[in-house]
Amino acid sequence: MGPHVSTRFVTCVPSRWEARAFTSGMPPGTVLRTGVGPAAARRAAGRPPVHGADAVAVAGIAGALRADLRAGDVVVATEVRGPQGSVGCPSAPLLAGELRRAGLTVHLGAVTSSGHVVSGHGRAAHAAGGALCVDMETAWLLTGAPTPYVCAVRVVADTASSPLLRPATLGRLRTALRTLARTGPALSAWGRAAGEREVLLAGPRSFCAGVVRAIDVVELALAQRGAPIYVRKQIVHNVHVVEDLRRRGAVFVEELEEVPAGGCVVFSAHGVAPAVRAEAAARGLTVIDATCPLVSKVHADVRRYADGGDTVLFIGHEGHEETVGTMNERAGRTLLVQDVADAERVEVPDPDRVSYQTQTTLSADDVARVVDVLRERFPKLRAPSSDGICYATTNRQRALQAVAVDSELVLVLGSENSSNSNRLVELAERLGRPARLINDATDIHLDWLAGVRTVGVTAGASAPPALVDELVSALGGLGPVRVTDRTVTTEDVHFTVPKEVRVS
Ligand code: SF4
Image (cartoon, rainbow, N blue to C red; front, top):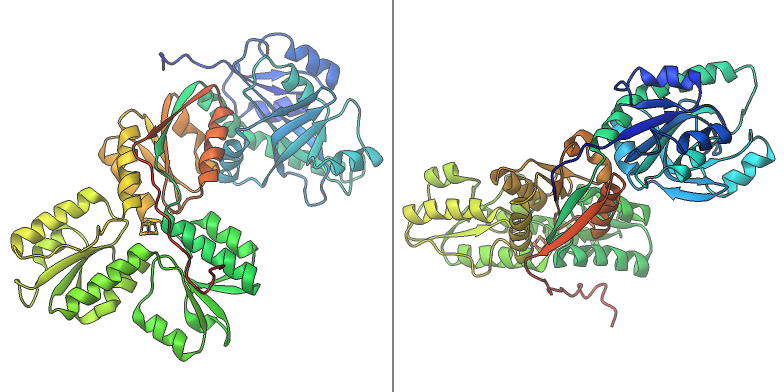
């Protein structure tokens, strides 16, 4: 990428009232009062500062088309429709996230513009097309704007049930204008974030074979047995995956006591302790085990080494479900080692009979440091029979390294409780790059992007690939984006689902 060229940005606000409410939050010189209605909007779009701007925003009030929108609710346009066609606003999730963090009630959807005041049947017609609100300027401003990097924020002033001039109109208008004033900082941040950039995509990224299998298990169980299907703990550590399955009939529980007699329960990808299996059997529950086969391998190793007389040192994070499940395979003969400090002080009954195992989702560098210390203290230390840190974790870390070195900012898609996603953030930070863990594009603070020309993007093994596409698309709404895929290796690992849900 070439040197950073500052972006020319303008926010268009139609009326004097709206401009007065709005301008208070904006840097001087970035707000244009366009005048009310299509003709004024068309004129404004055709001359400076809109003409010549790199990024154009529209802010104002609007009439709601959907019954659940209240006065003061904010609509962020994903699309603007008008008589001349429609304009997409792919950066809408970024703006919506910013406005929600400011405490506003935000809806994402289509905004439609009409050449005249719309009431009664007119509103019903627009609403039938799925638009959330209607105004009289946005379409003319944005279809006429010379740049595709546009956004629109409209605050509901009259609701679908009580439109236009009724006694309460003034109150609703005041509410809308007060809210409009609060949208200024977010739009201003949108303007600062606008600009050209490069996105470096780490590959492999996103779902691993164990996560695909675990999700398949729940989907197949739902399809074959019908809802509800109970899932002990989060099937994988990702809020989007969990919410999607919940909508389709999965019921997530913390412990088996929440599963009614005769219920069907899925064990999550992270594995369970033997006591959980025993409890399910004692209660006669139908169990479908979605434990990742690579986690099951570690369980088997722990049993084998412990039964052979070793003390097993388990390198992992206290309280993580995988740690709890694995260590409880042989609770009396397994000790937790979380870091180098633990490795330096752990005491074992027989220093010649020690082996180690690891959680599958740790940082390869961290584990290597811990193992070095253990090996120095216990020269006969036995290593796991399998890889320990799994192929997916290793590959995602290697891939991230390849993009982080050239990135000014690293974005890691993944949930807060996702171990492998957190390790990716730490890895980028260790390489000296600012890195953020985000659930999706709405978590991005627009100021993170201001002046940033190269963004590294990856996703943890439990984050759906669609989130990466949405993120790249959202960044593409801020300015021209060049996407470079840096794939360091390809993966062809596939695990078959358990027999309980296998279709022969
Ligand atoms: S991250 Fe590794 S161990 Fe965990 S589910 Fe994926 S493949 Fe299995």
